Every structure is written in C-alpha cells, then in structure tokens.
Length: 433
Image (cartoon, rainbow, N blue to C red; front, side):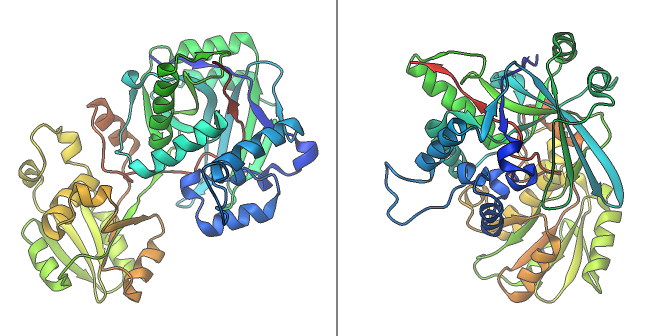
C-alpha cells in the first residue's frame, strides 16, 4: 500500500551555517510572529525566509514572499549553503524529548512517498487559507520543505529492527535542538539492501496523516496542476511524490497533546445561561481552581469530560450518556467518530449551545486554538475571550480508527509532539516541461 522512495535530498552545509539549530524551524503553521523574529535573528540562512518570509512594503505579483522564497532557495543552492546528496537515501530521524515527566524517543524515517490519496488516510478537516498559501509557495519554489507526519502500524516493529541494524553505534549526520530543548538526530541510509527491506516492510501498510493535512492536500493539488499542463517528472524527486516522515504507531514515544478551544464573539452570551443549558446533557461541577478543574478533567477522561473556564468560574462538563450523540451527530458517522471528545465538544456544545456551526468554524469566526492552557485561561480572565475549553488528548488508536472509516475529525483535533523540524532535509522537484 505504501510506496516509499529514497531520494537525493538537499541539506545544510555545516561548514557555512554552523549549528543546525540556528537554521531549522517548527512547521510553518507554528511559526508565530515571535518565532519568526527569533528565526530571522538566529541566522541569515534560516529556513524561515523560505517557508514563511516577511511581507515587505510594496509587495506585488512579481515581488512577494513567494518569489523571494524561490530566490533564497536558488541562491543558497548556488552558494552551496544547501548541498545535494550524491546518491539516493532514506534518513533515520530520532526525536528525544520530555513529556509529562518521562524521557522519550520517537523514531521515524524521512523518505519520499508516492502521492496516492486513495491509499492515504486523513483524519482532520483542512482550511482553505493555508492550502492556498502553501500552493503559492510550491508553485514558486517547486520544492518540499516541511514534512508530512505519517503513521503506519507495525506491531512487530520490523522497521525499527531494520533501521537499528544499519545505524546502530554510528554517529548521526545531523543534530539540532528545538526551542523546547528537544534533541533531533538524523542518520543517512544509502545501503540498498536496507532500503529494500524497509520498503518491503511497509509494502502492505496503510498510511495515516498525523500532521500536515494541508501540506498533503497542497501536494495533490500541485500534482493535478502539473498533470493538466502535461508536465513530466524528470527525476524521482518530482511532483508525483512528497517528502514524508513515517512513524510506527506501535513504537513507544508517540505523544499527542490536546488542542484546546477559545470561544469569542458569541452574540448575547451569558455564562450562567450557557452552563444551565449544558446541564441537559452534561454533569456540571464547579471547582475552586484551574488546577482542580484540570485534575478532574483528566480523571474523567473515559467519561468524556471537558474543563470550561469563564470569567468567574472553573467547571467540568461530563457527558451523561453517549447515546445522546446519536441524535446530535449524523447517522452516517461511525461510533468511533461519535465518541471522540472533539466531536462531542463541537456537536453538543459549540454548535448546539453556542451556535458555532461548521461554516463558522471554517471561517474562523468564533473559535481559536491553543496548546497552552495557561495562555487560554489568561485570555478569558482578561476579557479577550468568552470561554476556554480544556480537552483531554486524542489517542493514536483513535486517530487510526477514525481514519479507517474514511472520516475526518474536526480541524485541530490532534497535536503530535514534538513537531518534525523543517530544514533538516529538503526535496527539490525536477520537472520536464
């Protein structure tokens, strides 16, 4: 099912850029203004100038963030700031990090994957704006910078054994630390036998998009454009494939953070009336502090419990009966979909009680998202937001089960941690026109 291809990637030249930590970034959608500024300051060759450059006064159709991205890419290749591998390779990628008091290592492989939407399972809805932005960048640069974070299920952990036999005891080719202090290591694998064994181990596996839905759909849209123009691939690195990092969901080190919801601009909103209405389907319990609310939310995870912060209260909302979701969610949805916390929150609370329907979510009128609970609470207490909903995380198993039904969760349902760094390896397309 999964077609995995080694490739001649571009990577930073350490003799010019020095510490790789200075030139890599989080994925573009996590490059907030302060992160962008920090990346600009760290190095004149930071990849942020390509993936999310600064707009400039006087930008036009012929001179903008996308055209400048292409100029930076071409200049850096010409100046050997970016150097191309001499032979095709797969890249073993390890991320060592701390999560909820544990030290973990997540192990994956960077490769090209054939664009086969019918064989790849997505689990989240996407937004129009980010796809338009990424497509403009892809048209201008004809390159892959960020990764598609892919999952597959290999309970026997065959792939780990194949890779470990090749890289065990050897020093990594690349090392970097991200802003959270997480340690990233990359090894290059060029051994033909190892590559074939890895490809064979994934040959019967389904792929699931964990992170990068917008990037994957953008790649498919660009593929369609190229095919309409009758362009042809001129190398394995072209528009018919996309750079991916593949992780085994059965490996240890697979961590997901919840993405919490902030609600604003609901007309005639009254917190007391909202909580009273919520009591029809939820047990509403008030808590003395935010920490007590969080503890109760986590304890009640199996019973679909949400934390809810208003300007003057900390409460938990616990679903009384899962059967209520049969009335609130379309009958063509699976039970796995109906039982997701994000489904329950969106259907039974955001839509039914607050009037925030799918269109409002798509247009981003009333809901914003954060992984930082403290920031969420502070925004409500300042009066910038009306409500803050604290969620438990979606599990990897839930992601796979929902995707197996060819269903998509509401956007921003999962936050796999840590992120795959952008700038470790790049893939430049070769196209025959």
